[in-house]
Length: 359
Image 1: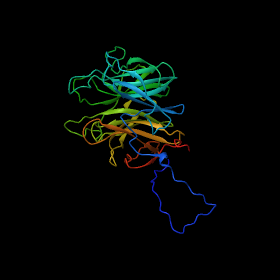
Image 2: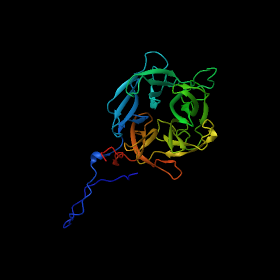
Image 3: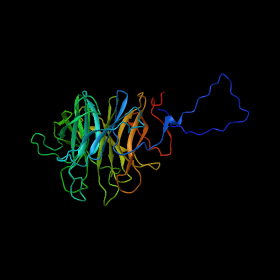
Image 4: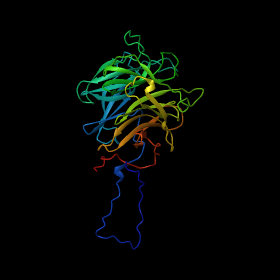
C-alpha cells in the first residue's frame, strides 16, 4: 500500500549542484491527489466492471446509476434507471440501493415503503429487487418485487421490516443478509438486528430468516440513553482468500458515534449458524474531525493493487442525515482481517487509487 504523502514546495538551496547522471524524481501532480469528501450523499456502493466504476444512488424517489473510469470521480454520467411507482408498497422512502452483477445480469437491492404517521414515517420499510433487461448496469430494469424477509417462507406469513439487503455466495450457495426487526410494530425506534437467509435465485429468498447478530456489545449500544437506538445495519461482505467477513454499521446513523463493526466467519461450513461468527469492534470510528462514519462499500484500485473503503460521514454533530461520501485505502492484518485505520482528516491530501493517474 502506498503511503500518504505530504506535498509542499521545497526552497532552493544556494550553491547546490545536480549531476547529469542523477535524474530528479518529479513531484506528484496535484491532479493525481484528492481530498475528502469526494461527493455529497450517503450509503456508497460501487462496482467495477469492464474498466468502469458504477456508483448507485437513491434520490428523488428513484435510483440512479453513474459511470466513471475514476474512483475519485464517482458522480459522472448519471442515468435514472428506475423511478418509484405512484402506487404500491415501494412508492416512497427509497433507501440505500446496492448493485450486483450475477450471471450476466445486474440486480439492484433497495429498501422502500409507504410513509407512516408523523414521528414514525419509516415503520413500513421492506426490501425489493430490480433485474436488468440485459448486461448494461445503466440500461432498463424490471421490478422483481418484494423479497421475503419473514419467519415462515413456506406459509408466507408476511414480510417483516427489512433494509440494506446484500448478497453473497458461500460454498456454492447464495445468501441474503440484511438489517431487520424481530416483528413489525408501530414503534419508530425499534432495535435492528442482522438476519441471514438462503436464496434460490437473485430475487427469491428460499429459507426462513435466522437472526445472525444483535447490537449487544458496549460499543454497539445506543449513544443517547433516552432517544437513542440499538441497531446493526448496512452489512457488507468482504473476503480475502478463504477468509470471510461481514462489516456492518452500528449505533445511530443520525448521531456522531455511528461506526463499523465486524463479524468474522470462523466456520464456513454453516453460515446460517450465529455461532459460526466472531464479532469484533469498533473496527472504524470517528476521529480526526470526521464523525458519524458508516454504511460503507469496498472497491479496488484500477490496477487491482489496492483496496479502498468508501463510507459516509456526518457534516456536523447536529442530529440528522446531512452526509458526505469519503474514501481511503486500507490494509490487511496478519490474520487476514481488514485494517481500516482511522478516518483521514478532510485537509489531508491522498494519492488517487493506483492506476488512476496513468501509472
